[in-house]
Amino acid sequence: MTQILRAEGIASYPNPLAVSATTPYGEARAAILSREGFDAAEREISQWPGYAPTPLHALPALASRLGLGALWYKDESTRFGLKSFKALGGAYAVFRLIQKAIAAAHGGHQATPAEILAGQYRDIVSALTVTCATDGNHGRSVAWGAQLFGCRCVIYIHATVSEGRRAAIAHYGAEVIRVPGNYDDSVRHAAAEAERNGWTVVSDTTYEGYRDIPIDVMHGYGVMAREMVRQLGDELPTHVIVQAGVGALAASVCAAFWLAWGERRPVFIIAEPEQADCFFQSGQAGRPVAVHGDLDTVMAGLACGEVSPVAWEILSGGANHYATVGDRFALEAMRVFALPQDGDAAIVSGETGGTGLGLLLAAAGEPAVRQALGLDANARVLLIGSEGDTDPVIYREVVGRSAEEVLA
Image 1 (cartoon, rainbow, N blue to C red):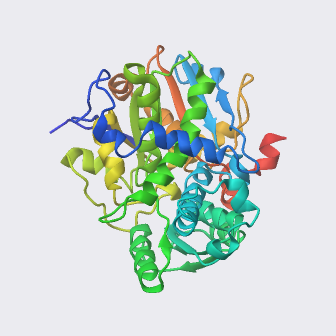
Image 2: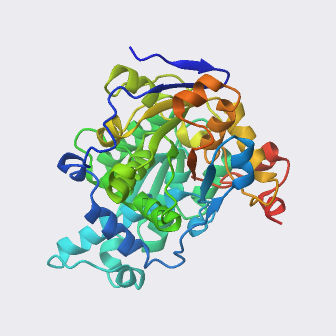
């Protein structure tokens, strides 16, 4: 069995199934996430009102403090006003569902965003109801997409989702229903209610007989990865740290970078909370395994106990390391971002957005972990800032100031 390095707030091991950097992306992976799928998502989403690439911050002072050669942070706190990368996925899947319904009724016509937004197919769109389970950000995206394009939306949240995140979803016109149990329990409940009512589940995780919509979600996330490829230009990172819940984001970034950079793609590190480490456990087993319990972590967007099977098909070979990080380091990352030094940008990052920096902070005093991950003075590290202050009350409690005060 692969040896796990453990220290306070961090554990890691190299993925025994990782393929070499020279391995082609291949037909099997392209059958899941493809260049054409990413192209289509970018073409459609770039036409939505309010679309603009989000910032990629270079953080040289923080890189120096951490003993790294360079550090970048992709800041999703401004994405479509939803404060999260999730805006790209759930809403895109809603759009694709509507587009397919219109095509079925109108001889295969591929309706454009402008046609749907203008209400040209209101009779078809208004008859649709979309639903999902969420820990916050995905449900907000689905609700926003449903409101934007004109269909009904019902969202299920589990016991520990904060009231602030519930209200943020309801703000976009969705009916929000709280159910007992953890995230995975709410996923099963949403699927059962959809079956009973004739609704369509828009989830970012796959299960038996349900693949196409989550793949649309993942292609939507690829817009963010495509932006990073352009923003980085020739300054390629040596490492990318991507947080994983069910793995949809991580798989999308891994696939997009693999397709764009080939053998020059960076070392890929998956980071998860200690209390919700389904990829960490699955990597040891060599197959997807479920993590049970309440999955209680401050990194609310990652409180998932089951790996998405299609994400596993990408990441089981594409990830180079699995790692977990303790909650206190994710919270510390939020404060570090909010109080920059020596000219770095002030950044508003939520608990989940701080996962990557949390891992770097936990590794900073652990030479064995740093060496195993290659986090030295030659490392150029890319972090995915997946969310801003998606719950402003929690953000103020952690950081001591509001997002507006941080950025003032």
